[in-house]
Image 1 (cartoon, rainbow, N blue to C red):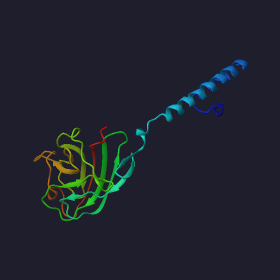
Image 2 (image 1 turned 60 degrees about the vertical axis):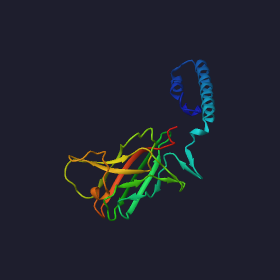
Image 3 (image 1 turned 45 degrees about the horizontal axis):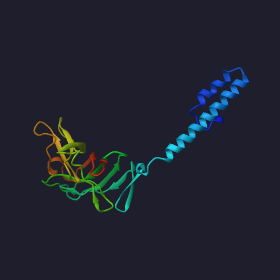
Image 4 (image 1 turned 60 degrees about the horizontal axis):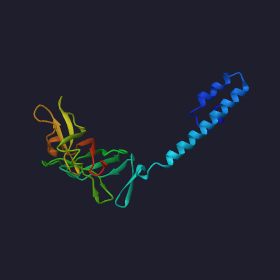
Length: 208
C-alpha cells in the first residue's frame, strides 16, 4: 500500500487500513490519507522555495566562491620552522557558524628561537582570515599538536590563538610552564622533525 503515496510520512497509518473490514469505510479513509499526503507535500515544497538565498551552501570572498563544509588545501605562512617540507594543510568553514577548522602536517627545516607560527588561510589570494576579536578577547586554547619524537611523560601540547591575528601559535604545558605561554619553534620541535596539528578558530566577519 505504501507505493500509493507520494511521501512516506503517512504510510504507517495507511498500512493499518487493511485491518478495517468495511471496504467502503476503508476507501474513504484511504482517500483522505492521500489528500493529506499531497497537501503535506505541497506545503513542504512551498516552504523549501521560500528559504532565503542567505542560507546558500556557498559563500563568496572577493572573486572566489567557497562551499561550506568543503575541505580546501592551503600552504600556511610559517615562522620559526625554517623551510618546511611535506606540508599538507586543509581548512573548512563550518556551516552557519563563525568557526574555521584547520588541520595539517609538516616536516620542519632548521628550527630557530623565534615565536613558532602557522598562518591561517588567505582567501582569494588577498583576504587574510583573522580571529574574531570579540569571540577571542585574549590568548586562548584552540587546538592541539603532536610530534614524531618521543618525549618524557606528562605535559600537554597546545595550539593557541590571540585576538585579531591571522596565525596560530604553539605552547606546551608541563611542570615548568603554562599551556597559554607561546613557545619558540626550536623549543618545541627539533630540526627536520615532523609535527601535526588541528585547530578551530572563530573568524572575524563570520559571526553574523
